[in-house]
Length: 492
Image (tube, rainbow, N blue to C red; front, side, top):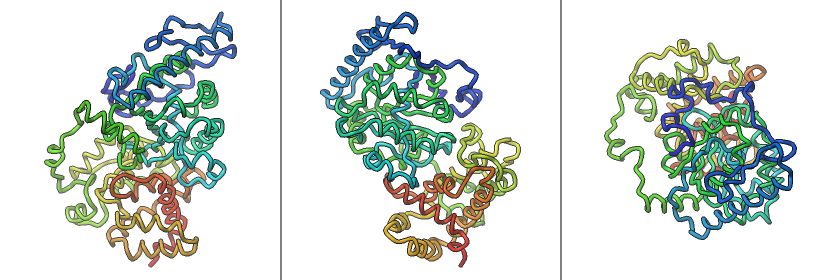
């Protein structure tokens, strides 16, 4: 995975390799590069034949700016046409553009989200039906993952891009108050479906600092020279600090180090294109199958094993990591704003996971960060070999959407009490009981039933194989029902 002007060691941007978490957050006191009301400073350096046409804010009139913009657009159009004519062939040197530091174009193009339980989505049904913007659960650090797929964008003549911008803003507002991650699948953007440059400029203007602050990572998958040229256009306008959050992803398998890949609904054209790249270039994988198969779990292992394994080796139905993290959170974090919606230091998370896996005691109080315990709980659930609600219940839960509210509640209670294994039931009840206590303090922690359902839904159940994100809202709605009707569903 390539990073613009950032060493590979910095990939752990929440961890010790950066020295301080605060390095990844824009300081409001730092100077920010903004638009000049008289026009835009557009500079195309490497990657454009008009690289000598560097314009400064002062002394540049609108006619000059328009001329340079037009030439740069022609460059981008030409590059995009080349990429289309080559039918997706991998181009040497197109993956890691030189000098890229931060690109709000790619941020804005990659940032849209789709709220899984958005009751107002009908207002934008003309946009949401395309599936351009989706939510894919959490990353390895407990941050919400938002996916933007360029290949799902219809031809520009069939898309109202102003409506798309409104939809992006409408849905993104539900996530920007928490840490989040963006994945942008670039393959499939072509001359027929790309938005106009004026739209990109408008997007930059409308998405202010609040959208940048909590964005912790932006993965640009399969970037090309077209991206490089766009960077040259937007480079003078963007805060340098944003560059540390950008990661260029050459191959899909590189995402697995940082995301739960099975949560990503990767569009078929992207999968096909990636397979062509892998076949042509045979990139090294970050691990070998033999190494993974040889890793026998410790008897004290907590992460990445089954509920049954933990029970057999610990002698208790309740996994120690669940009991200890909830006990600590109940005593210390019920009044913490944004509980379960903030990430934690990655290095400390790995340290805590290792201690649990080795059977050591963990003193959360000594870590001086309640969010570590919160993320550990979510990570434990997500790393189970089989989801807590089991693979067998995935399809039945998805089918509940076809029932009316009364029947849906009846079936949910029946499934939880009769079809869920007893050990899973005990653990689920314990977790849900605690989450209702969290929701009871929503006046101070801002974690409503709705917010908790969005956070925990993808960590309680997922299908075998790749997730279908169209069902994400159903899963979150089911989790919401478990919370709102806890006393009814969990009382036998």
